[in-house]
Image 1 (tube, helix red, strand yellow):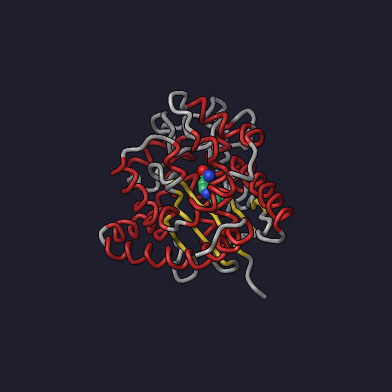
Image 2 (cartoon, helix red, strand yellow):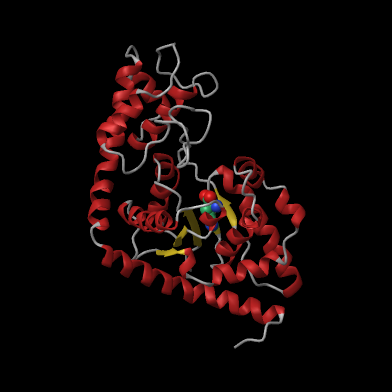
Length: 331
Ligand code: TRP
């Protein structure tokens, strides 16, 4: 039986956080065994906000190195840079013509981002989900591992695909969002009520995968907690401690009850140090591998070239089918 197809991606803005690692790529690594996986670097999506070109270029390559360092294996999965497979931009245009303004204006991410970037509400920000639909549909993906915040975008992808299939016949596989139970939902260390983010403006709020051990320790020590001084899981009233427990549990495999027992009678200081140490240990091999990869740009180039070729073979076939069905004169 053919393996099911998985596609996912992360935008190439800034450094990846512990949240991206525990919530996404660490699980992507495990899925490589059971699925046919496509892991993309969504650098075209990154254009919806202003970037310095050189920074964007280096962020894209850094993200590739991080995927590899985190254990995404190019022999098992297709790893590619979105802009290097032209079919994404091409299908996106076509799908724009099958997507309604009304449905796009209901997207919560669009509302949030346009509030945040009020000086640059460009049409790319508005049609962002259509490019994401193209990413997914080109590979006939069965499952799309995403966080809660991206679920709505997978739902609109399904609507667009169903609409297209209804007019032209079976063309796209209808994908499902894949919200993993094992994925940890990591919140900010300074504001534990919001997701840990690459672009948080709060100092010490996010742990970056490339943070040095001293920095990681310092950030955990400064993390916001409460005054009860009992390590106990209570998301509502103790979001800070609960978040630290979530992180500790995701890395060590201990349950919340185990952790409560382990730290009974101990203060927050000791718990914070324990969490920091397990994160430092977990990231150590990844950081070593990352440094090694960064010093070998030729190898990275070989990986993205091969990845783009592999992805193009599949993407191009879907695009050809679409172009023929909608009446483009095929070359
Ligand atoms: N929009 C996703 C995010 O911001 C990134 C992304 C782009 C993506 N294309 C995708 C995720 C396709 C899953 C599938 O996190």
